[in-house]
Image (cartoon, rainbow, N blue to C red; front, side):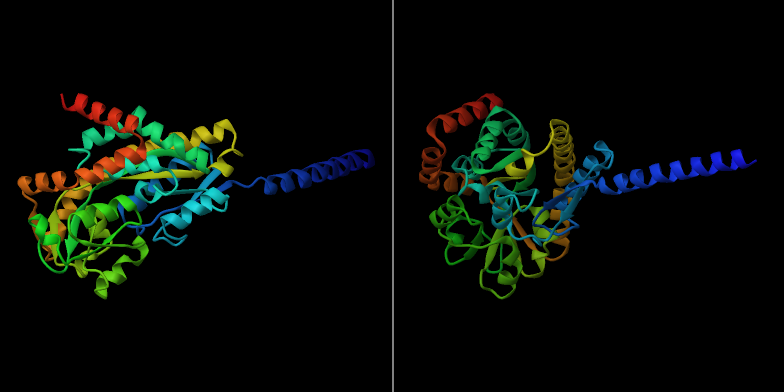
Length: 338
């Protein structure tokens, strides 16, 4: 019995000695935490897609990578988050391509007024060689682009009057993104264009610091601009993409398997987000009407006048992004339209 007892005690001690280091080791293995910032509220197409992305990453990594989504510009406006990514202080974000123009001039291509006639054209160009070429230029600046999401065709709201012809822009103080193409475009059309971060926009509309703004239907609804804007003019003047970005400093620390998890999840989120955004856009317009916004559609003849008026802006975009890239894009669009 003494021999059996000694054997049992020795075995128990050995098991305990092994279990303690194993438990300690398990505690040391923590999932890789990824902060993913975005500008809109949580209950928006952007917020829903961010959550979908987070779920895909955790599932594909077996819980070894976890995404913490942070919306409502809590990590700062797009420009601030971009700098945080470049410096390695934040891992990921999704935001407008328009706010990247100061970092990578080729991004101005997507700001071209009336560039795309429909979402089919936008998908083909953004997901093809031209979109990848523009995205690849970000790596020189400390950012890695994964995919483009859809913000949508942008439309005008204001508190003064319907915009039914180009002359209706006169005297309207219009908030635009912090982007020279947007500034120049709306100044050319006759508006008083004011650059402003999105996070400040609702307050500026409420206090009449600005009269109007331009965004897709989904954003107009989720941001509750109908509470401070009366008129909605359907202009579809610019197709506005969002882009999912990663800090290059952080990206380069990841294994190839980890990079693949993020890229695959980003592509899945792109397909989810576009479908969700497009379905929501129709519902959003109907809801904005139901909430009392006065909606008018810009006549095709006025859209043509605006295109002609913006010819000098387009020439400036071509010079900025490079004539070769501009010509390649126009040729690809012409081929799609055939």
